Length: 102
Image 1 (tube, one colour):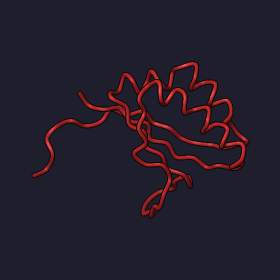
Image 2: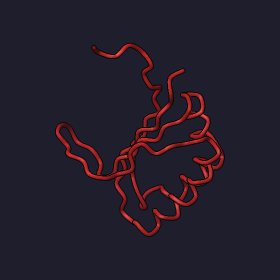
Image 3: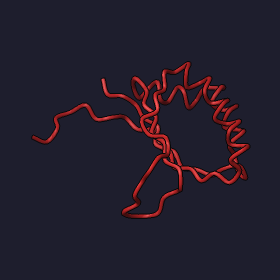
Image 4: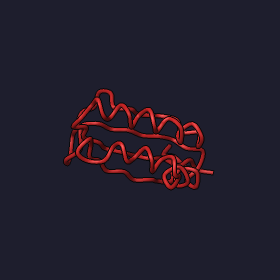
C-alpha cells in the first residue's frame, strides 16, 4: 500500500510564536506515526515561486495522512500557526508504489 505524504511550503513571519505551533503539532504527529522526510534544510530553487521553508512528512498510508490533518489535535495546533505567525501551502498526496524506470 502506498504511503501518504504532506508536502508543505511555509513562510514564517514570527519564529518565536511558530515554535509553539511546532510543539503543539508533535502530539498529532506522534499519534498518527508521522515521520519527517524533509524539514527545511538547504534547497536550490530552480523553477517557479516557492516559500522559504519546505517540509515533507510521511505517513503509513494516504488515509492516515488525511486523518492526521482532520484531527482535532492538528486543528488546535494550526490555530497557533495562522497569519500573522506564518503562511503556507499544503498538499496531502498518495505516494507511488508502482514500477520504477530501469
